[in-house]
Image (cartoon, rainbow, N blue to C red; front, side, top):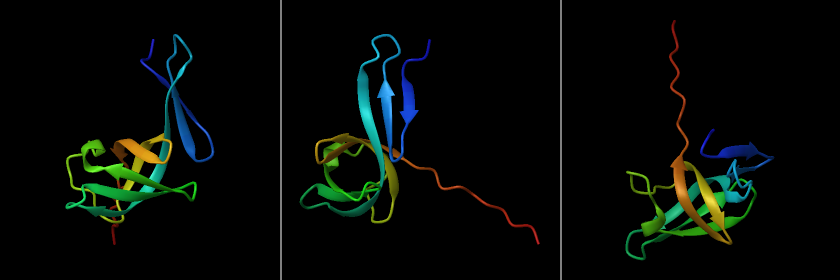
Length: 95
């Protein structure tokens, strides 16, 4: 049995436990707007049109948050947590 089940709706993904059917997280896709190393916080524009703030300690990816990076993140009120980077497709053009 899978550890969790993801349901994709218009702009969010809801992750549920298959045994209890309880929601474990609501994930949103968005783009990093800014990040201040001095303040240790940043902002993301969600695909839902809202802005979400995040702390550097919540950023669990190996790279530093930079403007324009596309991420999936868990929504907690107006805060973004539990980040996952969206892979950029690699294309090869043969001429």
